[in-house]
Image (cartoon, rainbow over all chains, first blue to last red; front, side):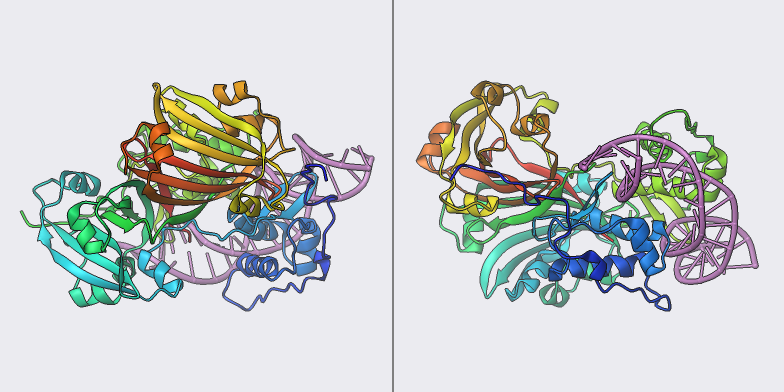
Length: 263
Length: 263
DNA sequence: GAGTGGTCTAGACCACCGT
DNA sequence: CGGTGGTCTAGACCACTCA
């Protein structure tokens, strides 16, 4: 058999007829119409009712079928295009992307990720006091080096096994952190609970060999490779709200994420 | 001095008057109006004409001043919100984000990144033949394990110093790769040149200690920590076009990127 | 209550794709 | 050439924030 790279969609025809999709919006609902439609299309793709490569049917017709205006339908489609689930081609149509990769792009909390993965995360608080930040931490937070900050050092475990060693620096009047809270949940959840809206983060991911102290904390043999992450997190006003220096056991953790090519 | 976390914008007033911004669109230009406006706002932010925290002025007025409709102005603003440069708040206004972090989110080519950083990247091709893929590579590309693929192994250097060891697997009828081309430029540039439109990628970043072979290729001492990346790249039709297994010298390379919290 | 962004409509013309 | 998405208009009403 020759080495072929056949297109996955030989013709631009819908695999299932998208006209048969059960789509309807509820105008009495407080949920925006474009959002209702986007959710239904997303569900149809995940259920397999809209198969990869199938065409969606043109926007005008879709709008007429649903009793919506075209801009509203476009807005719904756009949100899925932004998520990478649909692709638009002028003169062709809107097509469901083939790859079924997990969507992961948002700023995620390690605790929530582990919880969602069923890994029973727990936290051991080593340190939770005011202290002076390192030079990088002060610079990242935009504070003078003499200004004290909240310093939190934790070991994160899954099923009782150490997974990561987390150092975090926060402006000290941002929120109060009780040890009990830090053991019960993640830092981001505590920040959200205090009305802080996270907006973006700058991350640097690297690797190095573990120090003796880290080997002890993480139960790794001497000379083990660790995955490192430095992160500065900003709220929706653009204020830095956290500087983090984390190390992960490379034998038990890796970063997984998806990138979209921006237009 | 007490530990204060003063808001960076004491009052919601523009630091510079955005009404004085020199904004104008050219209706004769083939460039979309919303895009022209977005570019000008972006430039104003980067120049400092729009200072972090300043308000943009309401959309209605901005539209009137430019002779545009409000949806068009909204579209321009939305592109900058998506980039993380602006923040909208209902009842308040549209505000320039404070943090001046580099925007980096797109799927990037190592070669282009190094070139842009002035690091004079070069490539040594170790291997460029058809061969059988590993099980993971075949699975990632959606091909049977018996199907031969193009296997490319390269060492990437900067200023003559090894930086990374790159193994790539491609469907073999996707494109022809001459050694000379691989030495002169990056793989993504060659793919684009062949009309392949990259769309998204799934990446896994981890760490491990180097093997003896890798130490030799990368001029690292035994037991050195390496940064590893596995990547599957898809084109705009959703077809997998590349599976990559890269290792980077942790002493000379780290991944840097920015995350936005999705709404 | 005044002002803001969030949503929505019913049209219009253009640019690009494939046949 | 017909059909598709890309862009744009001139309004409208609502929800939220803040004084």
